Image 1 (tube, rainbow, N blue to C red):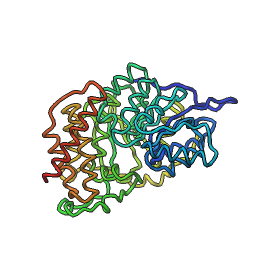
Image 2: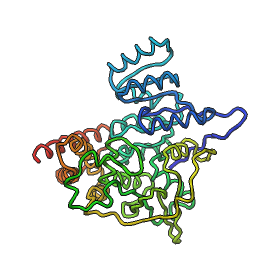
Image 3: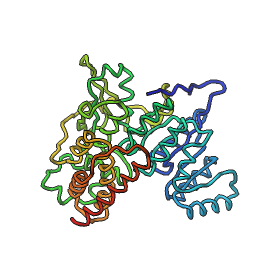
Image 4: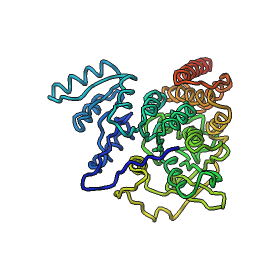
Length: 401
């Protein structure tokens, strides 16, 4: 996979990298904008794709004055245009929906695209950005879970770098700089274990959404927080790692590390293991991706006293069957990975709405996987069609349950 080599060093007349953010109002998006604030001579956002939060989208448009901003729906776009006119803000093109998100991702002046829209909603725009030759900072794991083969193939054909922003994959990317791909024996993705790491299995049937949304380490959106509680998030990361680093699932291991100070480890064939350790702050992997292959100085320091205790243990697949299902999907092929992601999204939403219990999430996913025929979509539209079919299947499974 190609590496981005554009200069980001400080000079008398430094190059300011122009970036697009898909998911600008989410946690990764706002963290990216904070990096832009900290490094104004290095990075500037010129295109933003927001969700439905018009207040935050308006505030971002007012502060950053991007050339283009897209928002979820046409009525919201009309409302945003009105807000901007009322404030006397001109020169910002406002679009909506998937066409708007694609326009943000492929803006001709954009050099780097941060893909941070949760779910397959960001898939088309991310693929379009790759096809347009943009360097990608990938925080949307569902893109590679659902359409990894297509995106990786396109990236190789276009000589595009895919730089992971997820803390675990970002850590692997950093550690792999210590050797060649042929020297890698296996990689270890660390997992906090979520809020139920020490909860007995017999109590899982009583877990509520309120309890599941209390992650011990990270502050994230609702779906990813529930995915962390079921360890499905780690399962998605296994599949993503297989795609990013061209490894079979058997060489992507998971270890529970509740301190969350070691973000991932790479084990080499000579027995050496390199670990990446840093603060639990998403700004660090974002900055790493934006600046790669350089490392700008930052204030994201790590207190070595936090290394006084480091615990590692095997995940309990009886308590967290979602992780097992992800490994099975990785081995089964593209259609299973698509169904895994789609069924999980529907099941998590049903759990949050009180329609199924916590253990109903893996039960729903497993049944959808059983009902999904093997296939290998050859286009993004084919992936999206398979995704919709799996979602329909998941809704039917839930309704019958």
